[in-house]
Length: 96
Image (cartoon, rainbow, N blue to C red):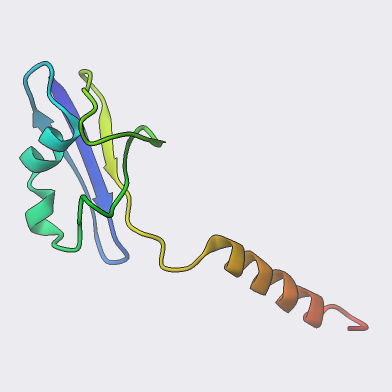
């Protein structure tokens, strides 16, 4: 079966296709892709993984055509960014 494996960081993105036997897992696809060697910052004990945007376990079985995604850890809490942006907009508003 053909499986896509995707990962990206701030500098580079990669999307590779691998051939796997039926019954292969998410972890099998990631290991076969070679992305662990290309992106040494990937740590499968810390990075979340998913299939088509849905978080899934490394041991989950794949189906032909699935796209495995390795998610980079967040460097900034999205809630913090939203709060800072709102405060900046409020202070820039006329009459503030």
